[in-house]
Length: 158
Image 1 (cartoon, rainbow, N blue to C red):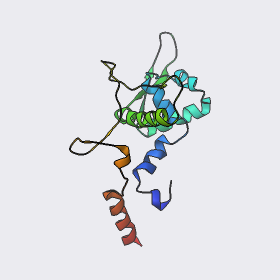
Image 2 (image 1 turned 45 degrees about the horizontal axis):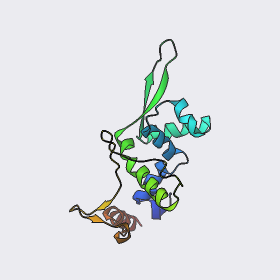
Image 3 (image 1 turned 180 degrees about the vertical axis):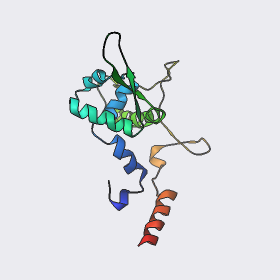
């Protein structure tokens, strides 16, 4: 990721955090309401890896570590989604929709995204600034203003 071609790429920066093995699954578990170390272990992650991944998600600002103390027991930590962590739901939903379309399960989706208080299913869509829905095959990726500014700075420095 440290190559110059990736230095100013939004996708590369995001993968630095979300692309680490287990991080997306840990976020999925947090969206399911899991907050405690033992609850996260249920996905099969080794303990030392779990501790490191939770620390990295806290350091990246996606989870917040909070202390709690059950009656008569020692103080423990729980991990709660931050605003940035909650925003990652769009990443999980995009991966889920892609998987359901291209790697479907025989009995239907393994995860469904819905409006919390009504249960109405929701789906991701591309929208123009004016609100018009655009099909994915009409969308292209191009360099943004940050890329051009960074390229100009690099050229000026050399």
